[in-house]
Length: 261
Image (cartoon, rainbow, N blue to C red; front, side):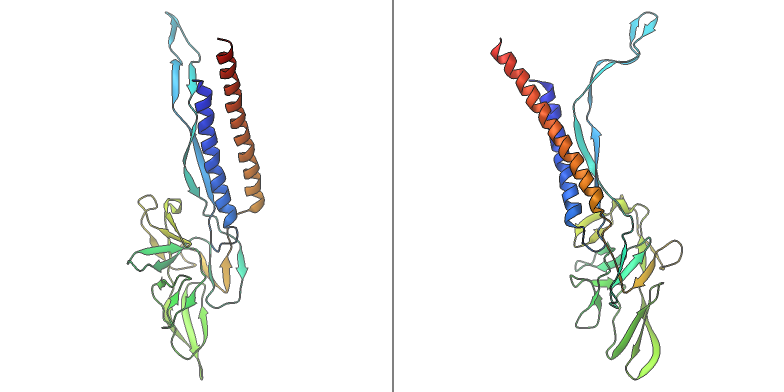
């Protein structure tokens, strides 16, 4: 069987994965705090038919060899953790991290998840929760009769109550960062989990020691750039067409051999 068929088959498969990655980015262009993915490709093993540097005679060596590639594969997908633009909402429980860091979310099974989505709400008990009802970690409870709530850039939460204009500090929102945030496991719902590749979480105070500041009344937009993704999609489409052309050409060569032998 013509080896070009199998090589182009790997190319078609790789470009299909690339298009899936791009389509997921475009689907999440309006998702708060979303971080875009990038498909990473690498070539497959080579069939060495003539070793580079092998002796061609007693006193000379081959300057180059004969190495036939067997195609391409998707080595992985990489999360790009650049900061998205901030959009003002004026809602007191909308928070954005301007710089490094993640919010901590307590999952029902006891695990801690991490997110850049600062769309928070208040439940029936006054706890600050995310859109799925999971508690912000550390847990902060807004007392009854709260008139205003202020969250400083370093995460200190203070409230004033009706009839009392004196601010009362009720807690502090920590931020967490990782030495390799690309190694976090995306689990959906704008949440990430720690892995061996990400390293252990480093808990810090917002606006200090290189951590980003917390901006109240703002949300972080997706870092997907539509024009960039559209250009990538065109590139993937053309690469897919070229690999399809190789399949067609190899088929025509095999057809010629079958008809003339």
